[in-house]
Length: 475
Image 1 (spheres, helix red, strand yellow):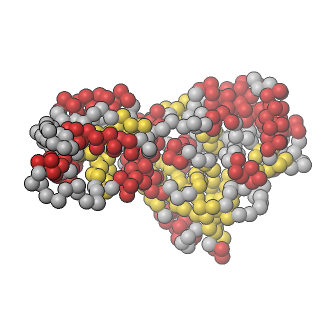
Image 2 (cartoon, one colour):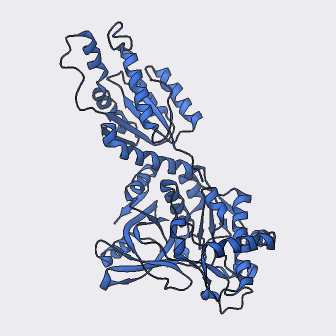
Image 3 (cartoon, one colour):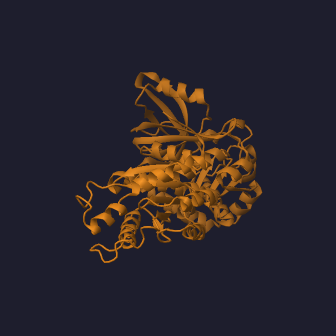
């Protein structure tokens, strides 16, 4: 799926007193010089995001137009740069009137100034035009006085590019989350009360609107999936992944049918996330099984599917998906093996096994956890996934006493065979003592649910938490 690029507002603050200085000089006026710099900076930022540039702001009226422009363009953040010293009343008005959005103050630097002295008028104008440090220092004092939170970066573009990219990515994730629509199917998980969150606070503080969807709706969607559609997906899954010999063809079809129904509900409600309570016995009485496969429509719409009715888990999944664009796995740590400095983690239920690089990590297997029950389709299969080896970030989101919190750490997923029946899983090795890691997590408080994503994204998560004023813990 082609994902939307982040959209960045670019605010360049110029000095109206200098604007026409330099007429007739070799390099042009101050306005022409700073205009060329603005084009250069916008082009550089354009490698990271779509840019919305209203032109250099010289007057308070320019700031008012810029605010309206950024609102109309629905930018995810604004990067502010002082082009030189300038009168600061327009900047103060911007800080006062700008709507709540991530802001960064970026001061570009260079290895050496393009002049040795300012005896020549052309060089003197360049001296004035290179005074962004003066404007930035003057403007910085108003940031805390007006209670604005602003990220600050100083350096050559190449040196701060990765930090700018992280800021843009975190801002994009924040904006996407505020626009998102989540579905809860059907209610919170009554056997895991610590996963409860206040849906009003979720909506008012961080954004996703919440739809409540009944098992009856899932049953209707399941019944609407034809045998032909279910069989076609069974054939596709069977051609792509190893099917264990004891998988019953009829049960395979029913698991595929119910899984496609989850996708149909995503499409019907236009969801960005479906939080599925897949352990309630009402589900098994209504549908006869726990759907075991990941419908293609989720990736097609950059959406996510998570089990056990945990909205907090859905939030961290969605955050990681927006930050990285990668496949996310749902795990809960099971036990520690002190001798190898490892722990085992995984989860039952629908799982994102669809990373084509690791198709050989998938086995279609009976859900043995429910195979001996009296439910209609007991033993229906699921995609049993061995989480691929490599460095992972494991991240958690939940509601604390007064705030939301993110808890995260990194660990190395180890290669190995499928071992824990009914659970997609892996063994993980930590860099520091594994007992110390979980001691720290137990101290700050969490739940058992974590999202696992490839690579180390703790810095992105920390910035995302800061932009949202969440508690943040990284180990």
